[in-house]
Length: 375
Image 1: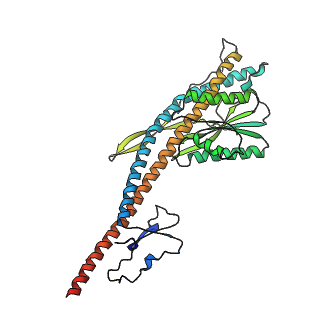
Image 2: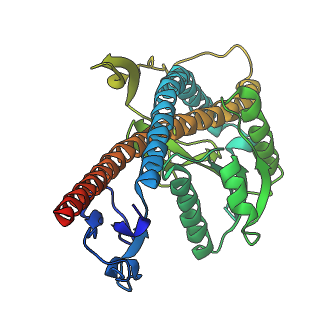
Image 3: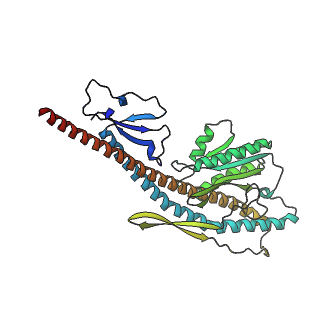
């Protein structure tokens, strides 16, 4: 059976959810003379793109889709296993991070009446802002990287409208490649994050931020990262890192608290012979901080010792949140890819069965026609 006897019409913008975009049309005519040229062999000039293939090509395409489905299913399960560990790291470190911010706030509040110079708590007129943009190192995670980059572009546009200068500290390979292709955006440093965020990586970012702020090259440091909300939702947020938050909580540029009240945990279970993901909602509990404290050391010395720890913990927390969001986005993207592969395989199998049936019917008609001709 020639390729011209099997025609697949695929629109210029195919949609797997619409079976009408992938249709089969058999133009087989067993009584057609060889000199006749069927109309299906003529390329169509309509808006649809005409793709012609035979049974062997269809079988190859179905096998390819099956292999792709296996790969995306495996990547989905791997991301589901990793996202729970990433979320556990975020939740386990959150009480320490939040309590540390409250302690620093209360110490800083007591020092407001004294004539002391603490560089990281000094609020000065903002002329230049440093943006720490946290992106991922890999793709295949939906719109995760695109969302945080768009957030950074929007913030840069706001700073330009306010007449403020800015510089970018890019963290992650995707962000690095994006800003390298745009030399008009000033970048102070390019950094890469590992597969699992560590305190050493956070310290490298904190050292760069500390030197920029203390040397007064920048007057404000903002941290842009993706906050993990749930398996299907993550929000790009802007966290004011320096100077120290005056409210004792993690706030964005508008003063809105970005701390999470509840967290979602995920566990892998088996259902109908397949691995599935179930959700658990857990509320993080932190002990109340008493403002009535007596310090044995000088509050200035305590603040000098805790502020570097504050920077490290907040950056590490942002990296952990970004990793959890990336894994959740990859899990969702691979789940959608698996569903699309299943639907495409079903549509291709339907086309293949119709073509095979048409071929068998044509051969039977040829045999019948030949028998009738011998009578």
